[in-house]
Image (cartoon, rainbow, N blue to C red; front, side):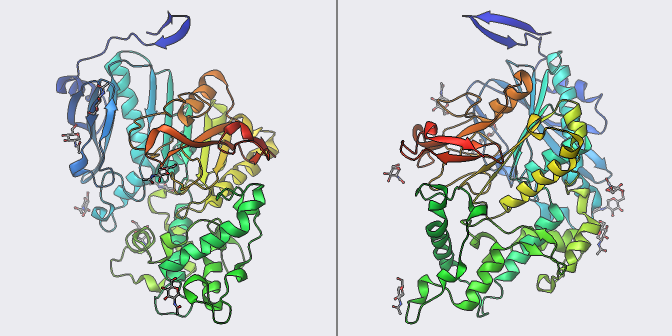
Length: 505
Ligand SMILES: *[C@@H]1O[C@H](CO)[C@@H](O)[C@H](O)[C@H]1NC(C)=O
Ligand SMILES: *[C@@H]1O[C@H](CO)[C@@H](O)[C@H](O)[C@H]1NC(C)=O
Ligand SMILES: *[C@@H]1O[C@H](CO)[C@@H](O)[C@H](O)[C@H]1NC(C)=O
Ligand SMILES: *[C@@H]1O[C@H](CO)[C@@H](O)[C@H](O)[C@H]1NC(C)=O
Ligand SMILES: *[C@@H]1O[C@H](CO)[C@@H](O)[C@H](O)[C@H]1NC(C)=O
Ligand SMILES: *[C@@H]1O[C@H](CO)[C@@H](O)[C@H](O)[C@H]1NC(C)=O
Ligand SMILES: *[C@@H]1O[C@H](CO)[C@@H](O)[C@H](O)[C@H]1NC(C)=O
């Protein structure tokens, strides 16, 4: 049951549902009605407590801190004779009748992905989409039974692989969530993972004449800043619109007698261009976009990484001896044909999600070196091309935001980037944006206001805290704008103030 309480003139809706005891017997009874489930453990967490399984959880080694009083439970879901996945739930003592879910990063999910071994399609399907849907469904059952009340709204927020998982879920099961926030989604799995290997091989082997040593990558990004920064009207160490910058790689070319530690040879310029340009097939179709100007290409190109090698080795070729230097462009088509775990989230017809009233916020850092920001723009454009001809106003249910200067999911040396999104982390902040806990600054509150009150998120103000470590002091704030609008500086006011910027087409 749900009662609106009037407190000091502010309408606060709170569920005064009876709640069950935080005990093993409670959960064993609830899980009796959830097929293939079993309880791992249950724990009571006091107010301002911390909780996690840091010691045994490879990808998530940090505990959640400053928690409200809650009951934590971990559940195992069997998916075949010898495969399963785990999920966890936090059940606050004071529940607001909402369900909020988050996803994973990379190729893992609380499980070291190499553990998955060879040719275990059931495990790949868990990673691909089954674990998210099964966890959401089982968690809803647990929540309803624990509070003996109905969930009013269901939400999802996560970044990277978690972003892909959110998009995949609304494509397969449009009814699961009312509001979804995805950051830097790794949605084009088969192309992204193969492009990742291609990036590593472009600057490989170390001995080739076109090889760019790690120390030279900052020379490249410095020159991008030099050439592109002012093109948005303000010299502020942030490239506002790298996609529109007309960058001349040849300005990096070493002049006669120049010290080669801060310039590139013609062969190195050829390598750099390949790292930033789109990856094309022989018919010039784009297999994957290049990283944006200003992103540091060193992240994927100093060494081919496991994100590319292992995906092909274990999930596409099923051959632990597969030699990654033999990678060829046709392997992208092979990866598409295998589509490990059916993970790729490329059903652009989001009309079933739209028709059930779903809202989607999607963002991507424009200095993301791991998942090219333009892959998100490509997703948005594909949805637009699919739905706009049917008369759908995309803005009414789907907003996409570029975040200038932000790296993968979080972080920037100079640009405001913090919006309280999935995996965004500032020490000392457990949730939301301290001092600015409102829908204008916090993307989670923005999706809730959109779903529950119809407040459209035309812009969200991103925050940079001093040194990214001091939540008491704001270094700067700036609006990020619903695509295709961009933040334009007004030309004279304080650039660190959000009011100095306007979202314009
Ligand atoms: C919450 O816990 C932290 C760390 O355990 C502690 O420093 C802080 O004082 C506590 N806050 C409150 C309000 O109890
Ligand atoms: C994390 O939380 C668990 C259980 O809540 C506790 O046992 C463990 O000591 C904590 N670890 C850290 C690093 O705080
Ligand atoms: C898992 O079980 C299947 C049959 O259910 C079997 O074929 C397979 O070899 C098992 N895999 C492992 C790693 O035990
Ligand atoms: C080139 O510059 C680097 C770094 O500034 C310096 O360490 C190196 O000695 C210089 N090399 C020459 C040949 O001057
Ligand atoms: C690898 O195994 C998967 C099933 O897990 C299969 O679909 C795929 O075709 C295999 N790859 C090759 C190259 O045979
Ligand atoms: C994967 O997708 C293909 C094509 O849509 C479908 O035929 C197949 O059943 C799916 N497999 C699983 C395990 O979902
Ligand atoms: C923190 O930021 C301030 C100004 O924003 C700067 O002066 C100071 O050097 C920074 N401290 C560290 C440790 O980076």
